[in-house]
Length: 110
Image 1 (cartoon, one colour):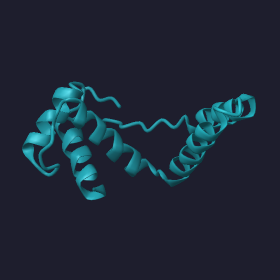
Image 2: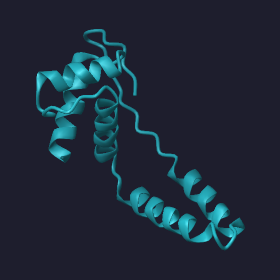
Image 3: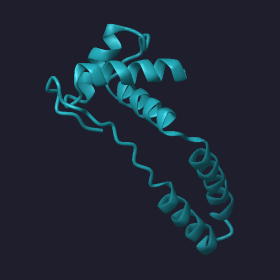
Image 4: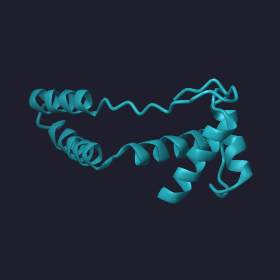
């Protein structure tokens, strides 16, 4: 996520997906696992496959926003000024407009 916060500039919210690498690493771990490790790793792989296939950019941004808000202890309504303020405190590089858009997207996804 980035933005320079200056008025009149285009800001970008970049969604990076590294699920392919994570899935490959989990598959290798399952192949190399001991009998004790295998059930947990297989479950982790199932979850990772499900989540990697289900996420679009909007839901990925919403989840990121929720995690950032949780990290600063915000527990209020997502459609509030306080949510925008908390998100900007968590990520100071976000402009007001970007923070509003992200909290709105998270509120719609919830």
